[in-house]
Length: 397
Image (cartoon, rainbow, N blue to C red; front, side, top):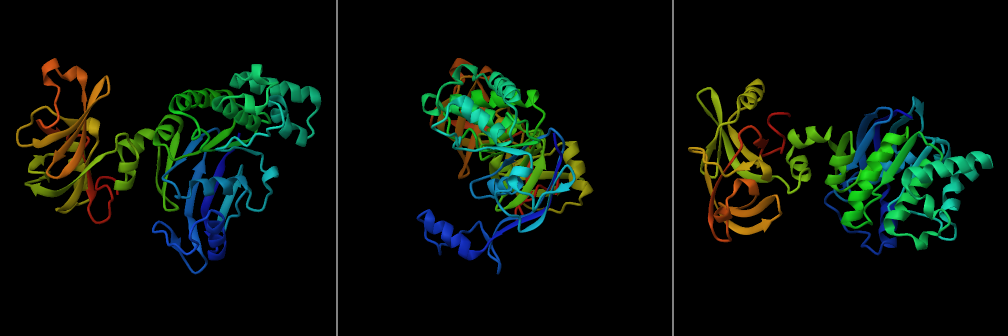
């Protein structure tokens, strides 16, 4: 059990260090990357990261590759030095504390099990380093194995286990010594889709049975949405938004968050926000959408001016039901039957759009075919309006 406080955390890699790392990976050491901020000191991997984590909270860092999420996790673990800022665990500053003294355990992407040891020996290893008495060690190993359902594999070696079983062992080795903080760095990325689903459920159950605070890193937004109490969405070393899964889904602060969270991703269109009397109206692809009263109120509170905007609509929030003056015509390019719904890929005004239509709403002779014309509109209660220049959500900036 632990609280964590990350205050103005920054990580800068000197240019020489970055070039050396690129050489080792076989990359061009002088190649510029557009998503990296470069200063006189070097390459900024994480910039002004601020986060308060409550006791027993499950926090997920999510973002595209290279956004700084794993680097931040490694700074918490003590595997990377903090260039600037402060890390506190239970009120104690940890910047200069050795990793072994932070009472933190970490689960890696590649399992990192000792191949010459049995499962039992892998689980015992961190306890042996702490000189835990044999009787207590046996008890803790048995409890961890039971929690994770790996008791029957205790005498096997890792090579005799499946990927999912190895990951359970790696998690078991992390929880066996009951750490204050459990760090997980993309632990499911090496598993196939079915195993990932199973292991997600296992991690949710595990969270209920142990008293650790969790920090979980992933690039998979499905994992982030299903596992996290709160999600930290990162891009280019900076935090874009922190919130519950529902908050970041319903109230994205900018186009990056809106496009990153949700599957299939949100549709975006060029549009205009205009005023018609005392009401705001969205003009998009020849249609006029009138936002709901609560949206009107938020726009009025911010004295929003008429402007060019980016209109955002999630595939599940696009409707085929006719609304006078608000319909847009599209041509079906692809129709994907998904069982409970049909995913339509439409070409509307040169824009590629995805629309999710529940099959329960369609009769047998109503299934759209490739090349057919479809009329659609946006649900006015869940349509999103973004500043075209800054990408910020006009309702929540």
